[in-house]
Length: 501
Image (cartoon, rainbow, N blue to C red):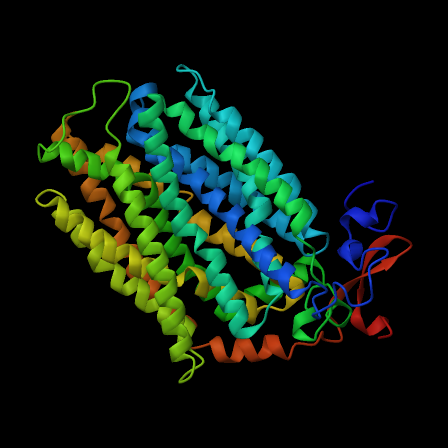
């Protein structure tokens, strides 16, 4: 039985109705809200999704936390080091549309279960890479993106089907706290385990064990909610259209497209800093004479630890401040969300630039400017997701999330770590510690320029946000819009005008 045939004997595993009221349950036991999920279970669901998102970002940035060791172990250049992040993001973004398509049509819980199990196994396999097989590390890091794509495209849409309006914004903020906190924990856990074990391979063996716990929690706690139920617009009133119709509609949604380009700038900056900031800080310490060069297999990764702590704190402050400022401004204007996102990027640009410049003279000043820059950069994480969810109708949200992932990563952090590494290699005139620092310093300045461009896209989003939100809230299929209806157990595309509703 294939996924293209959702009406067969296996429907109870894949269909959206597979987790309705359980046999023998008392009427109303799990129907305390239109989503079909009780209030307590909805909160537990958000907690489980937060935990899994935390693990995703821990794993993603554990490699960055031990990057000097990896470079020394394999004897690779900055360009090759950048590929570690690039192959992961490329795999992640190429598969996101597939999981977005499935997430809009089949049971999202089971899709995530399979993806997270696969991610955990591949992550564990990557920790056994031998010294002469850098290609194997690249391959396994690429496969990790398969599992993460199955989760990141779907989890926000589940939260969207559990809560609306202010509650949805709050729960999305809780969910997206996992991005900076998980990223920071990745640096902290990676560098700490590396120092304790004396081997960077052990740093990659922490998250797979925690991933097993995530699978069990997802299996026994999370329940599939009804799409659009909490918005008083259940699925049978919002017919699923074809994938091409979905993409056409999304491409004409200016708020969605412009905010996606703005988020692409965020992805470019965060992807570059995530991989290169600890290494840059380490090279700056060598340049200023605060640390000796790394000549052994176990380098000093204390900068990864400090950067991880800063990332955790700034992430919490940034997401919280973004939420509070946005909620306050919404009382005055419906354009508050894109304006807050624009302000965050435009304010982060000068502080990140100053952090890069001051690295050669003052470590304290560098960390202060990084703290401010990352705080402003983190203001938009939850807000961008909320924008997508209220300008896109429920039956297209997974597809929209997948498209945003593809575009933002393709033009953002899929290439930015590699680009920064290649530019650094090209600027290096000699293979000395001075030029290792200088070349990376100049190449990282590109991040500030990209942040300013991203702020411009969010300012443009503010021009269209009110109209696009109203259209999504009052959406009804047009007479000629093709929908997908079951016929003889198969999906068939027909015009709306040919179906009696």
